[in-house]
Length: 282
Image (cartoon, rainbow, N blue to C red; front, side, top):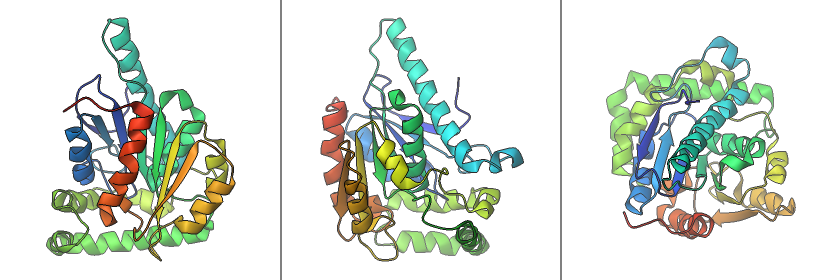
């Protein structure tokens, strides 16, 4: 099986592997700073364009009718492909990396959760960066948010030069991600935005409670930006799942890696080493 999603792979085939799943309107290359960060530390990094994003296929009508499940199917196709590759290396007497850790932001985080529930043997662990929270908004609210994203995208498409200048001027945007981020937003399939779907249809508390793999759950406390926040992290802790490690990054917004870069890596790096072991020197 080979995933239909476009992917960007950096690093050796036998190195500990990190799979990056982005949020809505993003892409693989708009995580360039993260890819470089992990590759320099010796990890194999596989950054994926979600369906309808970047260079991946656009959405077909039948897929949109089950968009949340399609996101999970796509992630599982990718992870199954990586597992098949690893088994092939072992069969040839070569060293194979353990199952990857999946780092998912927002939509990517919600997708990673459900994929790991369905096929836990395909991952070594999850890092959920302020995941989308299915069940917190009504269908009409989701549609309204999707329409708002579409309007914002239309405004950006009308003035791409202005969008690039704003990205370059942002205090939190890594320079290497400014142009790719504008490009990514221009590549989004508007059909997905109009559905309002940003997560599989599994209530987030139910998903967290069902996880059977080590999970680092991150959120910030920036009002109006962070989805979980301190309250959501406390709810996650109250579920009693010992495999979940909730961490609050103070001052962080929804995209923690950009808004509090040093604090993000300070929380994530030692956790990855505990789960996968240290990566070899790059």
